[in-house]
Image 1 (cartoon, rainbow, N blue to C red):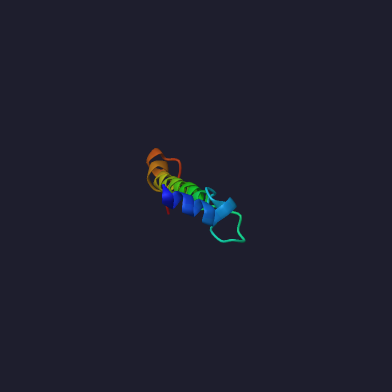
Image 2 (image 1 turned 90 degrees about the vertical axis):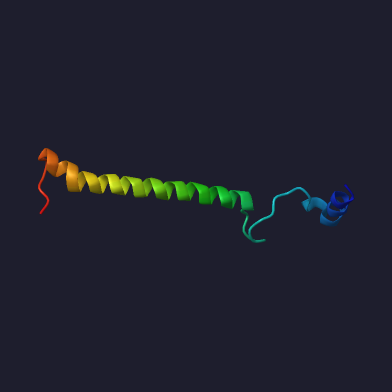
Length: 70
C-alpha cells in the first residue's frame, strides 16, 4: 500500500491515466493494441478471401463450365 501512495504523490495528476505511445501522439497503448488486433484480423480476412477467389477462378469456374483457364 505504501508503494501505491508514493507513486500517486510522485505522478500527481497523471496517476491512473494510460500512458501514451509518444508524448506528442494522442494515442494510448491500449488503443494501439486494439488497432493492431483489428488490422491483423482484417489482414487474415483479406487473405482468406483472396484464397477463396483464387480457388473459384482456378478450379470451380472451369469445373462448372463458366470459363476456361488458358
